[in-house]
Image 1 (cartoon, helix red, strand yellow):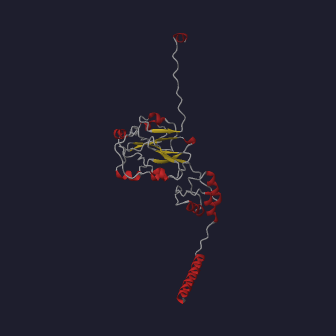
Image 2 (cartoon, one colour):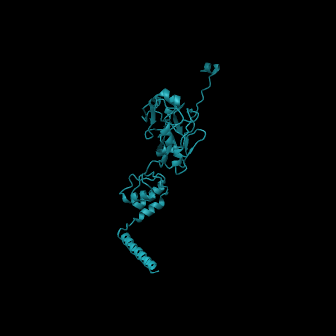
Image 3 (cartoon, one colour):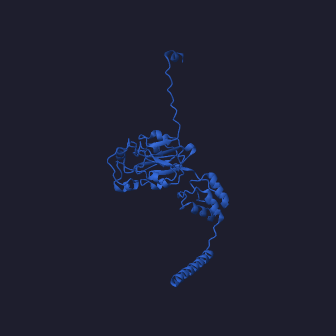
Length: 290
């Protein structure tokens, strides 16, 4: 009985000593957190998506407080009003960033890009890219397994069962960039929203020569360069048999869309162009009167 009591007393004293040591250490090395960090964290969405370049919302809040300015600090999920509130807490001016949206640069639907085989591996784009490049003749386009859908934390991207391609909901997209990083083919890009969410872009990333690209996909860019010649703003470049439109230079004139023989260039959220009806032919009497 005395042995048991001795053991209990020893354990109790040991626990008490260790508790006092831990308390002393916690007091000595206590870190005083800036209360502004908590205020900013409460304003943030708490998604921890990493779109800001930091591991999570708490790390972003700490950076806002520690830095001497808001340069380079932007939460892609937050609205401009929220960013203004964060700036007010820190006492710094906030940068007015250009809102962006994820764009899928591939039109290789089931109809445009015929299947050349059957992929029977893991249902992952990353795995398919490593194994055999997918089940079509295009080794650049969408693999259709939906890694981008799984990566999106805002339910802003879905796979279209009809086309087999991902579709971005521009109302839900926060431009966090998760889908961009998840795509092994690099077909998803963040582009400026522009006025009324209008965009003009080359919906293809195939770098094969024209005949090879066209055989793999009916709407592939063939590198003909007609769009480059049509652009008056030098917004289009041609490299490795592929055209690319610089969204910073593009003025949304859509001349390139009309010139593209492959319909590889898409114009999104534009009203349909007005069709000018031909003037009626003049009658013989009218011609005589003139």
